[in-house]
Image 1 (cartoon, rainbow, N blue to C red):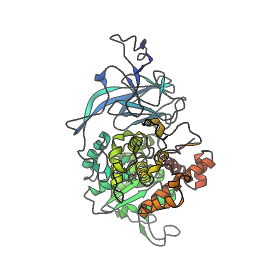
Image 2 (tube, protein in one colour):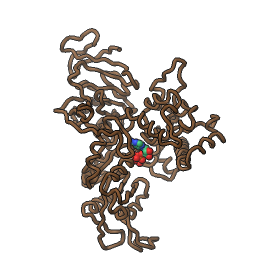
Image 3 (tube, rainbow, N blue to C red):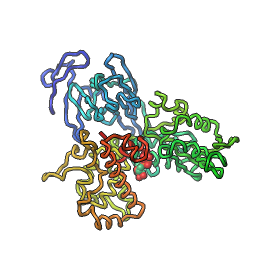
Image 4 (tube, rainbow, N blue to C red):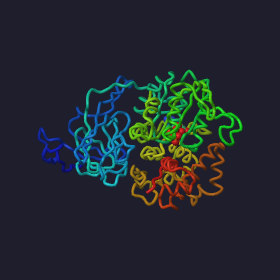
Length: 521
Ligand SMILES: Nc1ncnc2c1ncn2[C@@H]1O[C@H](COP(=O)(O)OP(=O)(O)OP(=O)(O)O)[C@@H](O)[C@H]1O
């Protein structure tokens, strides 16, 4: 362990832990944590630990009541409770704690509760995140130890008695697998909510499994024999969303040769999964709210109201609460949708799930595979990576590893092992200071054409081992990644220009970047 010179909490005299550890002096140590290179900065008061803890033989979760307080440069303060959902901190309007601070980056850092404590993670900010003058990328922040974010200061601390949440005994909810505490808490909530008719809102990054969960919710509801209908508001041109959702009468617009029911009607007696609800045009939001509340719709160009009976499950990767607060999403619709609101954790928040997920993806292959079929050393690399594309990226990486095991280090973007063995977690992380695009060496990277196994006939032979839908998906993913990478490179990393050239929205480019673990400079 390395001792560092520290000052005490606000206004207290400076202490250096090795020399001044009197009864009232707090002790701060910076230490490389045993795994994943996370820094642990520890106070010496274990009773104050703000940690997630399971008890009752794994059936319950102790959720400490923790508040996060930010003191802005002008000394105003902001406070937010920290629960299972991480808090995003930065100058951007989509943050949970919006900093009026010129030195803060748009998405500066993220704070979340873990089994080891409150984890503070810098999100590649310009001016960095510091704990006691030590610039960190990821560190545990003990209660009342200030962290510096731009010109602001963040302090976390206990805020009252802990809550107790049930944990599911299962390690899956439908097709969604997970055994980490956040996933078992999520499954327990969904087990209760699924059989009801309540509207649900699933929040989480792209690829975390929101659609998989929505399907499972439908399958465990009394509507399971009815249709499960999906509409992706992010994938439909804004001018077509209304007729897709609500349908249209004959002659409602040029080309509407026949009347057509909308997806709300088509989902009757079943579930309508509205994906990327955050992209629903603002002007359509009151109409959707009226439809959900009144349980009836009026097709475009029609006069009569028609009843419909679909349960609504909505999802978005956006911070809908923040959007409702800044007026870019209707607050009344947000409240109507979030009767049951759940956060689907990013894969980096639940790395304990990686071995289970990898096993599932291997068993699902034809012929089924096992962990032992992965190249030696693959699992620790998979566990060390941060997975910006989440479970989808992990699934595709496992598919590639089965196809091209000899390309382990190329696929996982890590240096080949040193003679003595173990690879550092750092080696697999995308370099935030990369060139115009970073992440090209991430697990999503397409196997290089120069490699024997990745080129020409050999590659085709490998692809032929897969069923056509999977082979198609592997190739399309590689094409999509290479296409986006090249377009961004051609446009100097400018997302607006690249989106124009690609003929898609900026939002879609952002989603593609996230899906493939790319970062535009
Ligand atoms: N918990 C899980 N267990 C097993 N597979 C999962 C899980 N989560 C996601 N997946 C896999 O990842 C893929 C992507 O999941 P899904 O489409 O549900 O994510 P999403 O959050 O809806 O993404 P997007 O927001 O981009 O639509 C799924 O096809 C599934 O194979």
